[in-house]
Length: 412
Image (cartoon, rainbow, N blue to C red):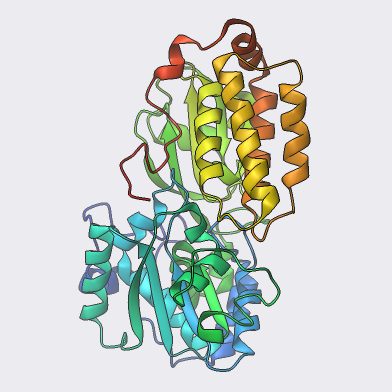
């Protein structure tokens, strides 16, 4: 059965079900015949589709496939660590449509010549693990597939740190080159792809690149899963055509529950935007991890910035000085702003420190923190000045909108 050219795509068939078992999956999407075309044909179709990674970096999927295909005895790693605390999309895929993710992983393995697939999911993700394990057991084509639990840490989503951990090492990023595509798990070329990216790849393998491009924006074709959270009537995971304005997504979720102070687009590696500007802007290149958080007026943006940045600083791998010391200093300065105890140079120091940490780590954690903090300081300048003059506000002690693992009961 060929899905409609519009929506839904990844979530097709879920209107009446909470999970597609193998029979339901085949009824919705039809079989995937990996022997019907040469391995290189899928790479060509993926290039035509313009599919980019949905994990946050947005790297062209076809380039990764081609790079790994040139190596010997490659491995495929499905990155479903979902280390962005506000994101829920990969968990929804694993729980609701695990066979689509498996199809994509198997198609990728066929394209690059891999016989081994590792599915990396958060440790303790019981429902996702059970759904995935049942799906693997139900299929005759998953002999080389294993499921591995990874720590619920922010760096678990960084591909070099993930590969290092899966190989028995510490969860720390590695200096590149070589990249995992060149030398990854057990020293072999490793394709690391986000779970959503591979679910899209399963559909490209069935319907081709032109079909994929029939939906979405020219810059980032296709559909995308977004996690809508914050001051929203029905928060959750939604499938949208890329290029859709945030206003349309919010309307589909029942609208906002209160006036908004601003919107965080792309999660903790994204940036804050004024509500009016964000509302009509197309969601494509700015999507990042697919997180859209509407911060309502009842929340304190200064407290939200401070708490989230403190958590991000604590997620450092502890191996790069600018990250360890720089992020801690930025977090401390933000805490002083929240508490109303800064000096006259606090905000200028933060601006200087965010510039100094960028590009100076083995991974991009400092870059993400710098973008998150700078955009927040610019958008919430009035609230920051109010805290500087008068100290904490009544909203500072409210339940955080920007969740972190400690705030939502997840083990570190």
